[in-house]
Length: 177
Image 1: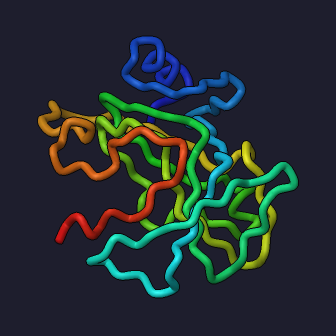
Image 2: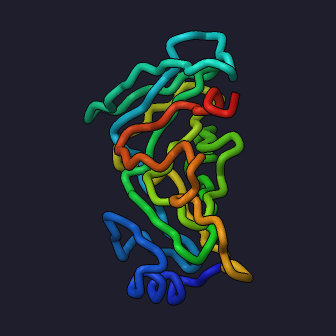
Image 3: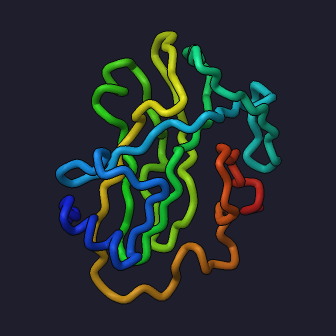
């Protein structure tokens, strides 16, 4: 089951969900709108290697915005830091963003119970489009978990994305080898 606005508010009040900063006007009927942070990253090398630590270059989005180009993977980040302790968060793009030809994730739309961080976005576009820091970029939808949890993400020894950050985080696939 998906949490409604009232259930999201209840979960926020008791600490089962954390959203920082929280803005009441971003709470929808059954979702919460998140915003594009001011940092993007692009990989330095055109050919990426899943067994190696692929380095990124950071870009800071200026007030006049930044033009995304097709054929480039941009790693973005949400302004919002989130935690979930008894629900599964799903990140989806907003329809207005999709209608600009922007995808905000390739495969990583689901978080784990216990995930505590900003969200790294895997941004691509079909034609050049100017984006701005602070613009609505996606929405979090929370699903109820059925059953007890033994392995919270933020307590796993091998969790690769636990370090709190306000910048996008490159792939850590290389740590699996």
